[in-house]
Length: 407
Ligand SMILES: [Zn+2]
Image 1 (cartoon, helix red, strand yellow):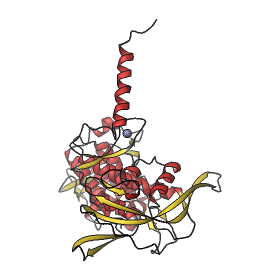
Image 2 (image 1 turned 90 degrees about the vertical axis):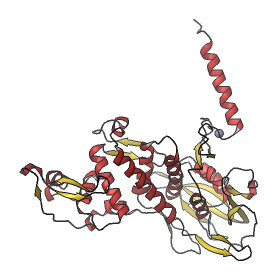
Image 3 (image 1 turned 180 degrees about the vertical axis):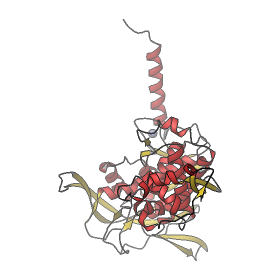
Image 4 (image 1 turned 90 degrees about the horizontal axis):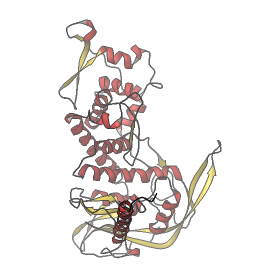
């Protein structure tokens, strides 16, 4: 059992918690195919780390500074380079492991699911910020939303006192895209608008309410007139199948189906997306910038709604290690937080992106994420040193440009 958290009292702390410190080594293993894979070896220490969250300042590890100064833990997590085990090791050695590990015992964690877990937390915070920014970047919001909604579920198995492995959130839409056979075929009476080629039926629609006319011809092509197998079906066609048949799903899932149906049809077919907000379209679709111009008001509104639902689902999924508890001495609400990841998600839960959000430092040699008031659209650098470095750099650049070129 980890030692009881020390009681730390701060007048303006929303919550405090403790988590064991941990040593970490990066190792490699090889898959049967000969691919190199990283693993993390974790050795818990007796030392206990104390964390405190203060609104506007974020979650602070008290070992490295008081809540009044010192960078917050979420900034450090956001600054981890994707897939880079070295930066993750540094984070673990400073703040301990994200999930509970067995005390006094060596644990091994595979890198891939851990990368995924960190990517998801990063995507969540980036998406919150993207929605709150004054200038809305729909391409970025779409990539981040798809990342949260459509990434397959991964899990991390650890020996600890909690039940079962940690699993990432699985949205209903990714479940049905992977298992469309669970949605039964719906036989709809075909109506005929004017002539036979236009046969089809009205489908209730949350993006373009109240109904959208789905042509029999379009549906038939998607399911290859009954010959298609779900295993080989493209996502775009599966979405058409779900659009016609998925009536007994949650309103959130239906919103995702309706959005994807219209997006694929009216804007373009998406090939890849990632947790950093990058999006690529298939070769048959027009270029992204041209495609995204097709995003009309209904699709924009639908996307923002979908993004907000994805955020809610993601944050609530990670409440597993958090228990509300009443502080009888202070007669105030408090939380019992069982591990660092829960503490980080609770700090996201308390974020008010309309007031403050995380932004990447514009110094290309830094890339650190820092918490700024949302209205401070001009604050571009994480620190005075980054701001000075960039001023000097720009000054040198201007001077060089002014000098006449030597012949
Ligand atoms: Zn910086």
